[in-house]
Length: 253
Image 1 (tube, rainbow, N blue to C red):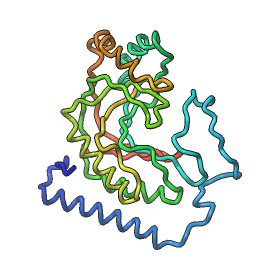
Image 2: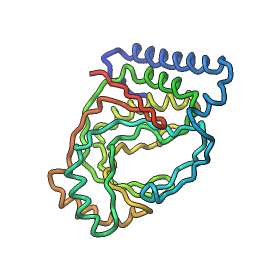
Image 3: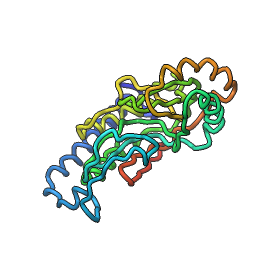
Protein backbone atom coordinates (compact mmCIF):
# COMPACT_ATOMS: atom_id res chain seq x y z
CA UNK A 1 0.00 0.00 0.00
CA UNK A 2 2.93 2.34 -0.78
CA UNK A 3 1.43 5.28 -2.66
CA UNK A 4 2.38 8.82 -3.63
CA UNK A 5 1.83 11.44 -0.93
CA UNK A 6 -0.31 14.50 -1.79
CA UNK A 7 2.36 17.05 -1.05
CA UNK A 8 4.71 18.36 -3.74
CA UNK A 9 7.74 16.91 -1.98
CA UNK A 10 10.09 14.52 -3.72
CA UNK A 11 9.90 10.77 -3.08
CA UNK A 12 12.85 10.95 -0.69
CA UNK A 13 11.20 13.78 1.27
CA UNK A 14 7.98 11.77 1.54
CA UNK A 15 9.90 8.84 2.95
CA UNK A 16 11.53 11.15 5.50
CA UNK A 17 8.11 12.50 6.53
CA UNK A 18 6.78 8.98 7.05
CA UNK A 19 9.86 8.07 9.07
CA UNK A 20 9.48 11.23 11.18
CA UNK A 21 5.82 10.36 11.84
CA UNK A 22 6.73 6.81 12.83
CA UNK A 23 9.47 8.07 15.17
CA UNK A 24 7.04 10.58 16.68
CA UNK A 25 4.48 7.86 17.33
CA UNK A 26 7.10 5.59 18.90
CA UNK A 27 8.21 8.46 21.14
CA UNK A 28 4.67 9.21 22.30
CA UNK A 29 3.90 5.54 22.98
CA UNK A 30 7.24 5.12 24.74
CA UNK A 31 6.42 8.05 27.01
CA UNK A 32 3.10 6.40 27.90
CA UNK A 33 4.88 3.19 28.87
CA UNK A 34 7.39 5.05 31.06
CA UNK A 35 4.73 6.88 33.04
CA UNK A 36 3.45 5.55 36.33
CA UNK A 37 0.27 3.53 36.12
CA UNK A 38 -2.73 5.90 36.07
CA UNK A 39 -5.18 6.07 38.93
CA UNK A 40 -8.31 3.96 38.67
CA UNK A 41 -10.48 7.04 38.16
CA UNK A 42 -8.32 8.11 35.23
CA UNK A 43 -8.50 4.68 33.63
CA UNK A 44 -12.25 4.60 33.86
CA UNK A 45 -12.95 8.19 32.93
CA UNK A 46 -15.33 10.46 34.73
CA UNK A 47 -18.21 8.63 36.36
CA UNK A 48 -20.56 9.43 39.18
CA UNK A 49 -21.32 5.85 40.08
CA UNK A 50 -20.38 2.33 39.14
CA UNK A 51 -23.51 1.30 37.30
CA UNK A 52 -23.71 -1.59 34.86
CA UNK A 53 -24.90 -0.45 31.44
CA UNK A 54 -27.53 -2.79 30.02
CA UNK A 55 -28.00 -2.79 26.26
CA UNK A 56 -31.57 -1.88 25.32
CA UNK A 57 -32.02 -2.09 21.51
CA UNK A 58 -35.57 -0.77 21.86
CA UNK A 59 -34.12 2.57 22.95
CA UNK A 60 -31.89 2.78 19.86
CA UNK A 61 -34.28 1.90 17.00
CA UNK A 62 -33.40 -1.79 17.34
CA UNK A 63 -29.65 -1.30 17.00
CA UNK A 64 -27.37 -3.62 18.98
CA UNK A 65 -23.91 -2.86 20.39
CA UNK A 66 -20.98 -4.42 18.52
CA UNK A 67 -19.23 -5.05 21.84
CA UNK A 68 -20.18 -5.02 25.50
CA UNK A 69 -19.96 -1.70 27.32
CA UNK A 70 -17.24 -1.61 29.95
CA UNK A 71 -16.19 1.34 32.08
CA UNK A 72 -12.87 2.76 30.94
CA UNK A 73 -13.28 1.46 27.37
CA UNK A 74 -14.30 4.15 24.90
CA UNK A 75 -15.74 3.34 21.47
CA UNK A 76 -13.63 5.23 18.94
CA UNK A 77 -13.72 5.69 15.18
CA UNK A 78 -12.20 7.93 12.51
CA UNK A 79 -14.11 9.36 9.57
CA UNK A 80 -14.49 12.12 7.01
CA UNK A 81 -17.50 14.32 7.91
CA UNK A 82 -19.94 15.06 5.09
CA UNK A 83 -22.45 17.91 4.88
CA UNK A 84 -25.97 16.85 5.88
CA UNK A 85 -27.55 18.39 2.79
CA UNK A 86 -25.25 16.69 0.24
CA UNK A 87 -27.44 13.59 -0.19
CA UNK A 88 -30.80 15.11 0.71
CA UNK A 89 -32.40 14.56 -2.72
CA UNK A 90 -30.87 11.09 -3.10
CA UNK A 91 -32.02 10.07 0.36
CA UNK A 92 -35.58 11.28 -0.23
CA UNK A 93 -35.91 9.62 -3.63
CA UNK A 94 -34.54 6.24 -2.51
CA UNK A 95 -36.55 6.24 0.70
CA UNK A 96 -39.78 6.75 -1.24
CA UNK A 97 -39.00 3.70 -3.39
CA UNK A 98 -37.62 1.29 -0.76
CA UNK A 99 -40.23 2.07 1.89
CA UNK A 100 -42.70 0.20 -0.35
CA UNK A 101 -40.68 -2.96 0.32
CA UNK A 102 -39.43 -2.72 3.91
CA UNK A 103 -39.27 -0.32 6.84
CA UNK A 104 -36.36 1.98 6.08
CA UNK A 105 -34.76 4.73 8.17
CA UNK A 106 -32.72 7.78 7.21
CA UNK A 107 -29.08 7.93 8.28
CA UNK A 108 -27.86 11.00 10.13
CA UNK A 109 -24.40 12.57 10.34
CA UNK A 110 -23.19 11.51 6.90
CA UNK A 111 -19.56 10.37 6.81
CA UNK A 112 -16.94 8.28 5.03
CA UNK A 113 -15.40 5.77 7.42
CA UNK A 114 -11.61 5.52 7.74
CA UNK A 115 -11.57 3.00 10.58
CA UNK A 116 -13.57 0.26 12.19
CA UNK A 117 -15.06 1.08 15.57
CA UNK A 118 -12.27 0.26 17.99
CA UNK A 119 -11.95 0.38 21.77
CA UNK A 120 -9.57 2.80 23.46
CA UNK A 121 -8.83 2.95 27.15
CA UNK A 122 -9.57 6.38 28.55
CA UNK A 123 -5.98 7.19 29.50
CA UNK A 124 -4.79 6.50 25.91
CA UNK A 125 -7.15 8.88 24.12
CA UNK A 126 -4.93 11.98 24.22
CA UNK A 127 -1.85 10.07 23.03
CA UNK A 128 -3.85 8.40 20.24
CA UNK A 129 -5.21 11.75 19.04
CA UNK A 130 -1.73 13.29 19.13
CA UNK A 131 -0.34 10.46 16.99
CA UNK A 132 -3.24 10.74 14.54
CA UNK A 133 -2.73 14.48 14.17
CA UNK A 134 0.95 13.96 13.44
CA UNK A 135 0.26 11.19 10.95
CA UNK A 136 -2.05 13.28 8.72
CA UNK A 137 -0.47 16.72 9.15
CA UNK A 138 1.03 16.71 5.63
CA UNK A 139 -2.05 15.33 3.82
CA UNK A 140 -3.79 17.62 1.38
CA UNK A 141 -7.50 18.11 0.81
CA UNK A 142 -9.05 16.87 -2.42
CA UNK A 143 -12.41 16.40 -4.10
CA UNK A 144 -14.23 13.15 -4.89
CA UNK A 145 -17.24 12.06 -6.91
CA UNK A 146 -19.76 9.48 -5.72
CA UNK A 147 -21.85 7.85 -8.42
CA UNK A 148 -22.68 4.21 -7.62
CA UNK A 149 -25.37 2.78 -5.37
CA UNK A 150 -24.18 -0.06 -3.13
CA UNK A 151 -25.69 -2.21 -0.39
CA UNK A 152 -23.71 -3.11 2.75
CA UNK A 153 -24.26 -4.83 6.10
CA UNK A 154 -22.44 -4.45 9.39
CA UNK A 155 -20.18 -7.30 10.54
CA UNK A 156 -22.97 -8.82 12.66
CA UNK A 157 -25.36 -8.60 9.69
CA UNK A 158 -27.90 -7.04 12.04
CA UNK A 159 -28.30 -3.91 9.90
CA UNK A 160 -28.33 -3.24 6.16
CA UNK A 161 -27.28 0.06 4.56
CA UNK A 162 -27.93 1.71 1.22
CA UNK A 163 -24.96 3.86 0.27
CA UNK A 164 -23.37 5.79 -2.56
CA UNK A 165 -19.81 4.74 -3.36
CA UNK A 166 -16.84 6.93 -4.24
CA UNK A 167 -15.79 6.61 -7.87
CA UNK A 168 -12.81 4.27 -8.39
CA UNK A 169 -10.89 7.15 -9.94
CA UNK A 170 -10.28 8.52 -6.42
CA UNK A 171 -9.26 5.20 -4.86
CA UNK A 172 -5.55 6.08 -4.81
CA UNK A 173 -6.09 9.31 -2.87
CA UNK A 174 -8.51 7.71 -0.42
CA UNK A 175 -6.22 4.74 0.15
CA UNK A 176 -3.26 7.04 0.77
CA UNK A 177 -5.25 8.92 3.40
CA UNK A 178 -6.32 5.63 4.95
CA UNK A 179 -2.71 4.39 5.11
CA UNK A 180 -1.84 7.18 7.57
CA UNK A 181 -4.75 6.21 9.81
CA UNK A 182 -3.84 2.52 9.61
CA UNK A 183 -0.27 3.31 10.67
CA UNK A 184 -1.54 4.86 13.90
CA UNK A 185 -3.77 1.84 14.51
CA UNK A 186 -0.79 -0.47 14.16
CA UNK A 187 1.29 1.65 16.54
CA UNK A 188 -1.40 1.19 19.18
CA UNK A 189 -1.92 -2.50 18.32
CA UNK A 190 -5.48 -1.89 17.14
CA UNK A 191 -7.40 -3.33 14.18
CA UNK A 192 -6.81 -1.54 10.89
CA UNK A 193 -9.54 -0.86 8.33
CA UNK A 194 -10.76 -3.53 5.93
CA UNK A 195 -8.15 -4.99 3.57
CA UNK A 196 -10.19 -4.11 0.46
CA UNK A 197 -11.97 -0.91 1.48
CA UNK A 198 -15.05 0.35 -0.30
CA UNK A 199 -15.28 4.05 0.53
CA UNK A 200 -18.89 5.17 0.69
CA UNK A 201 -21.54 7.28 2.42
CA UNK A 202 -24.49 5.40 3.92
CA UNK A 203 -27.74 7.36 3.75
CA UNK A 204 -30.49 4.79 4.49
CA UNK A 205 -30.60 1.73 6.78
CA UNK A 206 -32.87 -1.01 8.01
CA UNK A 207 -32.72 -3.81 10.56
CA UNK A 208 -31.59 -7.31 9.59
CA UNK A 209 -29.83 -8.65 6.52
CA UNK A 210 -31.82 -7.28 3.58
CA UNK A 211 -28.98 -7.17 1.03
CA UNK A 212 -30.57 -9.50 -1.56
CA UNK A 213 -33.91 -7.75 -1.39
CA UNK A 214 -32.51 -4.25 -1.86
CA UNK A 215 -29.95 -5.30 -4.47
CA UNK A 216 -32.74 -6.84 -6.56
CA UNK A 217 -34.33 -3.39 -6.80
CA UNK A 218 -31.16 -1.37 -7.52
CA UNK A 219 -31.76 -1.19 -11.32
CA UNK A 220 -35.18 0.42 -10.74
CA UNK A 221 -33.67 2.78 -8.19
CA UNK A 222 -30.90 3.90 -10.51
CA UNK A 223 -33.40 4.50 -13.31
CA UNK A 224 -35.63 6.58 -11.03
CA UNK A 225 -32.80 8.67 -9.63
CA UNK A 226 -31.59 10.06 -12.96
CA UNK A 227 -29.35 13.10 -12.39
CA UNK A 228 -29.27 13.12 -8.56
CA UNK A 229 -27.12 9.98 -8.32
CA UNK A 230 -23.82 11.69 -9.14
CA UNK A 231 -22.63 13.95 -6.30
CA UNK A 232 -19.34 15.68 -5.56
CA UNK A 233 -17.80 16.66 -2.25
CA UNK A 234 -14.53 17.90 -0.77
CA UNK A 235 -12.38 15.89 1.63
CA UNK A 236 -11.23 18.78 3.85
CA UNK A 237 -11.36 17.43 7.41
CA UNK A 238 -10.92 14.22 9.34
CA UNK A 239 -12.66 13.60 12.65
CA UNK A 240 -11.95 11.23 15.49
CA UNK A 241 -14.82 10.50 17.84
CA UNK A 242 -14.12 8.75 21.14
CA UNK A 243 -17.13 8.46 23.40
CA UNK A 244 -18.51 11.98 23.75
CA UNK A 245 -15.16 13.53 22.76
CA UNK A 246 -14.71 14.72 19.18
CA UNK A 247 -11.50 15.91 17.53
CA UNK A 248 -11.23 17.62 14.12
CA UNK A 249 -8.12 17.76 11.92
CA UNK A 250 -8.00 20.04 8.88
CA UNK A 251 -6.20 18.83 5.79
CA UNK A 252 -3.90 21.18 3.88
CA UNK A 253 -5.42 23.32 1.12
